[in-house]
Image (cartoon, rainbow, N blue to C red; front, side, top):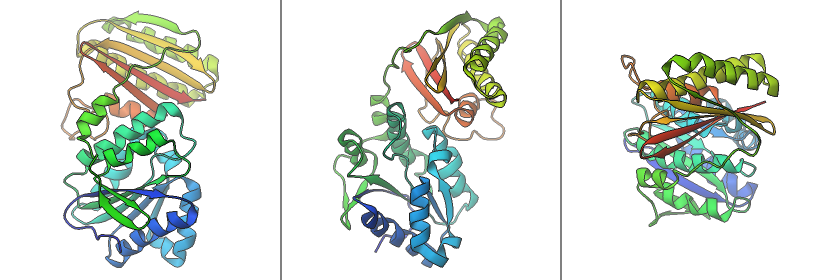
Length: 310
C-alpha cells in the first residue's frame, strides 16, 4: 500500500528491476491516487507510458500521461512546466506524480542536470500537497547514477520495502557539488567578444553558424532568442563584456556565453517569476527553447552553454 498524499510533500525514489517490478511499484501508487480522487500525472518515457497505461486498462483515461523524453528533454524544464505546472493547475488539492527523469540512454552531459533537478524538486515543491515517485532502473543505470537516488530522495522504495535514506543531502549543497567546469569544444568554434552594443553581432553569428549546421529556420530563431537573453544578462546586469562561442558537435549546435556575474539562487530558470517581476525570465526562456542548458558558476563569472538538436 502506498502512502496517500496529505498536506505535506512526499518525494520517493523507486528502484526497480524489470517490467514486473516497475509495474508493481508504480501502478498501486496510481490506483491509490485515483481511489482517493487525486489528480494523477505519469511523466515517463513513452515505452513506460504504454506499459502503465496497458496495466491500468480502463482506468488509464483518468490519468494524464506525458512522454518525459520529450517534455523533459531539457531536465531544467521539468520543474516549471511538468511538476509545478501540474501542482498549480490543481492548486489546493493533493496530487500524485510519477516522474522518471533518468533512463538508460540519457546523454552523459544530461545526467548532472537530472541529478540537480531531482535535488531541487525538494525545494520547488516543499509547500505542495504532492506525492512524487521517481523510478530508476537498477539493472541498467550506471552505479554512479544510482548512488544519487538516496541523496536526492528522502525515501527509497525497493522490493516493496520503503525506507528513509540516511544519505539524503541538502539540495543546495548537492547542486553546488555538481557545479562542474564544462568540457572544451571538440570541434572548431567561432568566437566573439561583445558588450551591450554588440548584441546584434552575437545574434548574427549564432544565426549564421546554426543555419550552416542545418538547423531548421524556426529553431534558428529560437536559438538566437535564447542566446540573446543570456548575452543580455551577461552585459546588462554586470555592465561589462561577454564572450560567445558557437560550434557543432554531431547533431547538436552549441552556443556558449561567458560573462561577469554571479548566481545567487540555484532555482533560477526553474520557477516562473511573479507576473509583476521585471526579471527572472531570461534563463527560463532559454530552458524553454533549448534542448539542454548547462551552467557553470565561478566566483566572478557565469558560463551558460545552450544545446539545440539538429
